[in-house]
Amino acid sequence: MVLNKSVMPVVIRAIRDPGQWEDLSQSEPGWVFILGGAIDSVAESVARLQRMRCTVFVHVDMVKGLSSDFDGIRFFQDFASPDGIITTHQHTINHAKKLGLTAIQRVFLLDSQSVDSGIQQIAHADADAVEVLPGVLPLLIRYLCQRISKPLIAGGLVKTEQQVLDALAAGAVSVSSSTEALSRKLWKRDSLQGPAAMPQR
Image (cartoon, rainbow, N blue to C red; front, top):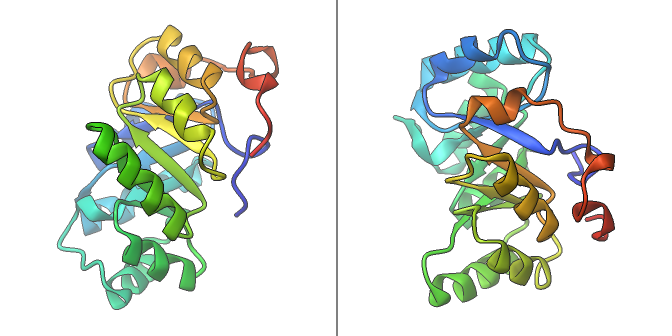
């Protein structure tokens, strides 16, 4: 799956409890990030969400009992069949890509050193997109977007529509959030100011 503005939604729903898939039963099909849980419950939630025509990515670092080596990721692909994975680890990205899985690299922006090291990690990994946390730092988002070629997802602490718009205006392609109201809103990318003027990634 090639990730860019044409396929990525404005807002991606992030859920920490796989059982929260039920909260999405009345929503339009979209993208969902599952941020952990037991392997069996994650697999069940992936299947249910995909039957609802959702595209599902799983943060494999946070799946209980799952090994991050090649065999572990291959087992998870066969067992849960997610559309893609999220991870902070370069070796896990490499395993996922060998298996044909779409991979999103998660990077934490804690201080200036973590920003610089994050840019280096992104350059050395073959992820399809990058998720940066927290997603409420538009100046840093803009700084990163000027230095990386991957689509950027802003995630973490995003709770308001204005924070979504600020991240998009700074260059983010998408925003991930656990705030239900944001994922239920029908976002139209063409009508948003700021991101439409950014070059497509």
